Length: 77
Image 1 (cartoon, rainbow, N blue to C red):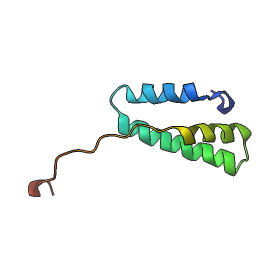
Image 2: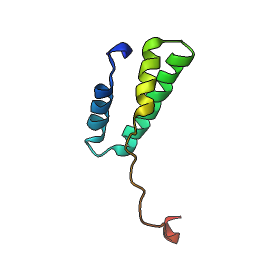
Image 3: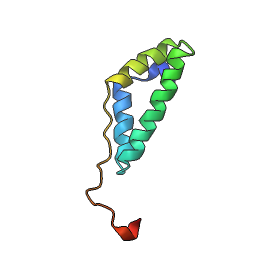
């Protein structure tokens, strides 16, 4: 897929696909890497398609994994 072909619907579809198997933390990490790459293209390479996708990514809020409610016990340390 070309960067110029990425739209908001495609990004949301990727988010749902990646998170569908219960890998919410990995989804968040993958979007972080995607943001880094797209920002590089937009700033260093001065790519218009990257600039457009960077704007889309800035408007997205990717779900984060829930924090565990349990506290560690001494045996776990």
